[in-house]
Image 1 (cartoon, rainbow, N blue to C red):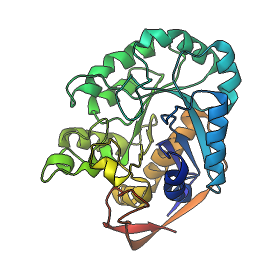
Image 2: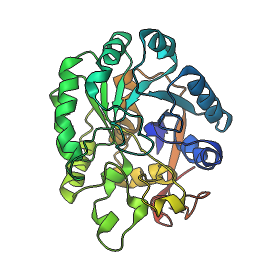
Image 3: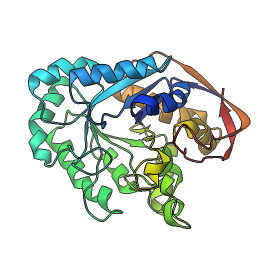
Image 4: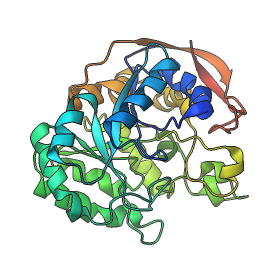
Length: 321
């Protein structure tokens, strides 16, 4: 099968040696990816944005980084200067996930920024969780999504890495809400994290949830809903940090083989999920890239640099040429 211009709408690459180790897997399988800005220090100004993009381009070929900046209280002049060089601005509630300590403490504090973003047609990308009970955090954030959608009706808002099925119901209620779904929320449940021995390599935020959530998400994705897009949230951490509880799954090496099995021959819906929906929803103009997947057994790597990938050592029925 041939996929046309696959796009990962949510990708962590880190910096330095880690970036060099992990970026080949994304650059081989995708034409473009939306790059997350929660580094230390965060990507939240022009100098940081340009240097990070240069590092990505220097370590990849035939791959377009769609850059995000980290939400803060930007001035209008700053946003006018950044607008042409970014895809979106990423909102992290303060302290909710990796490197988000400098995130937003009160949504209302950034309302002036959201007003300008709406005028400039800059999308808002959101890590939507409260600080409540871990399985309820996404569900509790639904009211925030609804308020944002109502208060800024012309602002395109992306609900990132949806793991609670109820959030997907919002897509048909608000024209300006969109969603990304990860490989791990599509395929895994809490049993894969704590059902037997604790598996820290399957720990992420938002946490993978119940079979009911997973099954509903699968049904939604297989329906071909035009506002649901693939975003891996592939997030590499050294094994030593994963054993200390770092949140994030490194799924980049296995994405297309795993999705090929999931869609099981439904290339039309696969193509929409992996590319067409994103390009149409956000008028993305990235260089075309054909990626071929063949039906041949392929074993996922056990280790990449200092990182253990998702499904390490698993044999898949498909491989990427």
